[in-house]
Length: 136
Image (cartoon, rainbow, N blue to C red; front, top):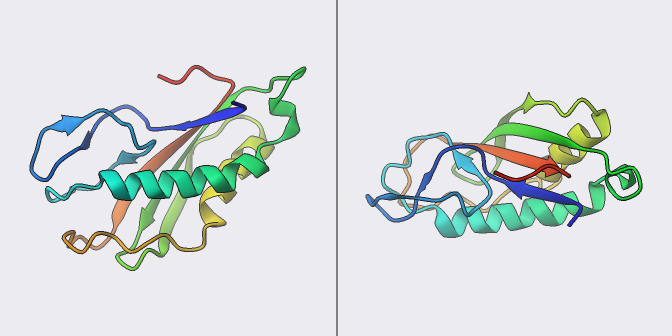
């Protein structure tokens, strides 16, 4: 695999009102989840983002160059699925890697609506994109 999309440090709730589980969805939830289970939702948006990201990964990430970097993008999803505020929290030091991660999210245009049981104004997330770096 040329790159890996994984979550940052922390945990996400795996069941409504339940105990936290490991970051399997590739995203870190930064909002209060209000005991809503976001597992299926996160799997979907991570899969959509990964699908967008793979064709954008620069060739230099492959052998023989094997360019390395980690990009962290923080963004929000509004109740209707629209992408709200976005910011690059962690830069890789290479603009091509940063852009690939950024456009992996923005090229989706709109994600599915948030689960109807969630009544927050938005869902704040952090996605980390790893290029030839060990995923922790």
